[in-house]
Image (cartoon, rainbow, N blue to C red; front, side, top):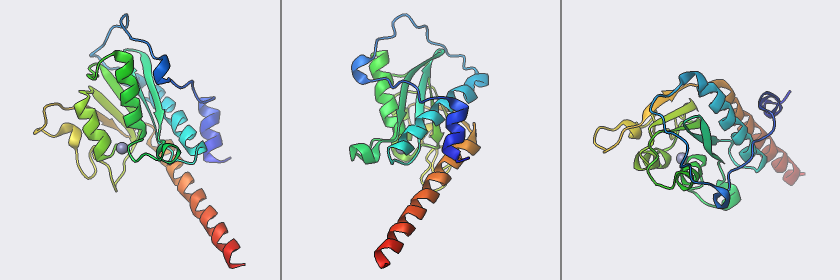
Length: 197
Ligand code: ZN
């Protein structure tokens, strides 16, 4: 069974997307500074489902959600190709959604779940947003900025640090990416073969 089907089977249908025009202020939702690591896999599975959505649109499958208290307040996926926007990473879109929801650019009490180690842009944005915590699936040794190439979110020179947990559901997160790039290589090979005929 293809990886995408397995993940869809595990996670059910892709969840409803929070549109910026439909977000509500979360006045009555209490924040929490006590995070429950037992729920990390549950929320990472949500991020994986969102990554599948990116794959279906032809974008590299990376998904992210942001949790405040026990509530998911942002759901996003990589949309670089769809939007022709180099900044349209899942994490950036999720931060914007969450800020709209909270009614503030400060995301105190929030945890971001993302399938791949964030890049330098997204890690920097997490610091700027005063995010409390980031949980990611697999490492990105080529561009990762939360432990691989850099650790921007825990740089003592900056005015905010983000708590980090890595390796949650790392295998399915990694499989999504390797399956995507394998299919892309096969597609290019087919196109090349067709051109030479
Ligand atoms: Zn990024």
